[in-house]
Length: 338
Ligand code: GDP
Image (tube, rainbow, N blue to C red):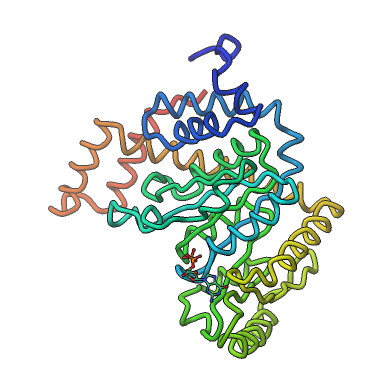
C-alpha cells in the first residue's frame, strides 16, 4: 500500500488550477484510460485537486442536456455557451457519444460540432466515446466534471445523445436537467422514455421557427398536459415547457434565466448542497460496484472457476443457485475482511 503523504504532487495539478485546457485534456485522458496505472494517477490527481477546489465546486452549475439525435442539442449548446462566454463565464461541454460503442466509429466525430464555441478562449469542449465507459457513463463523467471545475469552468454542460440509461445516469450528476423536444411529435414517437421526462427540470421544444411554429405550440400544450400527470416535485418546482429556436437564437435567454432561477431557489433552500451530497454518495457506490466487477472479471482463477461452473450448470452437475453461491464464496475469500 502506498503512503499518501509520500505521493509526489502530480505535475498536472498546478496547470489545471491555473486553467490550462491542455493540462485538463491530459487529465481527462488519464481518467478515460483503461490502464490501471493511469486510473491510479487520475485518482491521485483528483484527490490532490479536491482540497483546493471546494469553493469552485460549490459555485459551479452542472447542466445536463438531452434529447433524440437531430433535436438540436449541439446547436442549442453552442448558442447557450456563446451567450455565457460573452458574459465572461467559463463554459465546459462534455459530450457522450453512444454511437462509438456499437460501430467502433463515431457519428459525432464526423460532424463539425460547436465550431464557433470551440474557438472561444472561455470554452472547453470534449467528446467522449461511450465505449470508453466500461462502468456506464457515470464512471468517467463524474471525475471529468471535477477536473473541469478545478480548471475554473463555472458552467459544465453534459450532452447525452442516447435516450435511455445514460440520461438517467447523467441526471444523477447534474444540478439541472434539460430535455429538448422536436415540435409536432409525441414523446413516444421521439423514443423518449417517460422516466426521462419525469426527471427533467425543464422541457424545451426546439426548432420553433418557420413552418414549425404552429406545431410547436401544440407540442408545448401536449407536454404541459403530460407533465401534470407526473408526481409533483419535492421542491414544488413547476417544470416549465419552453419554446426555442437554436438556429435563430430565440428563447435561449429564457432557458438560461429559468436555470438561474432554479439554481437560486435550490441554493437558498439548501437543496443544492443536499442533492450534490446525495450524488456524491451515489457516485461512490457506483465506484465500488465498478471496482468489484472489475476485480471479478480480471481475476484469472475466478474466471476459470466461472467457466467450470458454467459447464456444471449445463451438465446438470450443479444448479444455478448453488453455482452462484460457490462463485461468490470463492470471490469473498479473496477480499480481506479488515
Ligand atoms: P443534435 O444531434 O441533437 O446535436 O442536433 P444538431 O444540433 O446537430 O442539429 C441537427 C440539425 O437540426 C442541424 O441541421 C441543425 O442545423 C438543425 N437545427 C438545430 N436547431 C434548430 C432550430 O432551432 N431550428 C431549425 N430549423 N433547425 C435546427
